[in-house]
Length: 166
Image 1 (cartoon, one colour):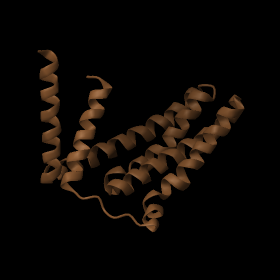
Image 2 (cartoon, one colour):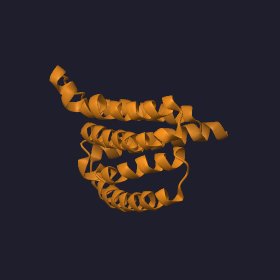
Image 3 (cartoon, rainbow, N blue to C red):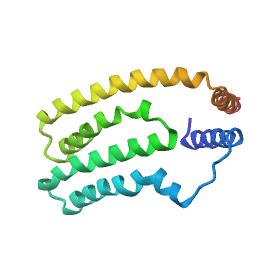
Image 4 (cartoon, rainbow, N blue to C red):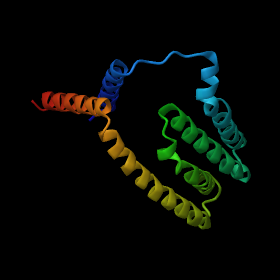
């Protein structure tokens, strides 16, 4: 399946979701409340990455650890705020140092000793993500409008797939 088809299905699903759930009114204060990770945490992570890649020196690879940490924590916080998914996405905080250390491994000389804490943190985060995701999946299945959107999207996908084969 092409990426364009996946984006199209995603847009259809998003449109159906907007039909089911009205978009809330947005106040200027709500922008700060909803997007503080995007405004404060993630730019710091981008700054650390920019600083390292601008210098081009392996000596500054240590900047990637806080950079990866800030970007990952910012993404976890932003997604948790937007989708009210703190109870599902909290293992991302355990994964954040693993991301930073893995970036240090990739761009800082590939010291194999770094893979030990990366593997441990990623495995712990993976177990917790799996346990919270399974619970969230069953909670979503009992939510009728979202289940309807999933069924609509799956039906459209099958229709498009059938047309391409014939």
